[in-house]
Image 1: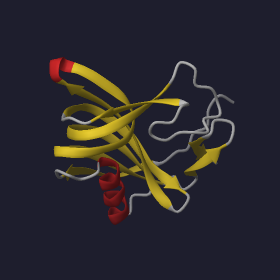
Image 2 (image 1 turned 90 degrees about the vertical axis):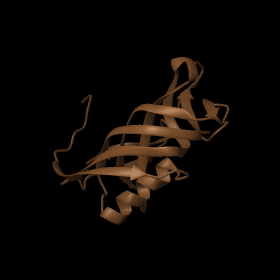
Image 3 (image 1 turned 30 degrees about the vertical axis):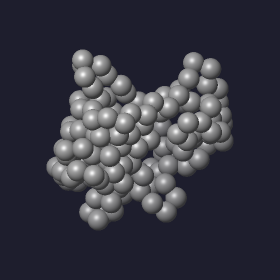
Image 4 (image 1 turned 135 degrees about the vertical axis):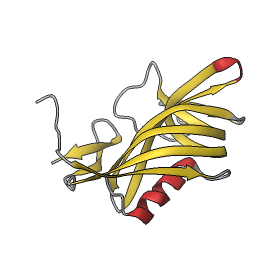
Length: 158
């Protein structure tokens, strides 16, 4: 089978504003924990970041990815140390061992409308972040688990 799927329901939608200086990933995870969101979808994201880093596969990246940290030799890391505009973002929230993990992909722009995009390793909010999060229910059989063949924490559907 080429896919696995789990049915669920949309329980609630939240609009969240994260304030300057907040770590974007940590802020979303803390909000989710406080609101009891164990399974969710990040529907949209706008705002600004003052610094951060993206991860993308390299042309020569092979599986399994054994070194997936900022600056690792198996992936490309794109750090930025200046304000950027979040022009689009999406992601999800699922259990990973004993915590809820936010998995985020963003597109940001800087001067001259140049864009950067990828999996967000880290990012600090500059002015604010406006985020829409949907809480899902009925998906207790969906979680993240480490897969040795990819070297990544992947969504599992049982």
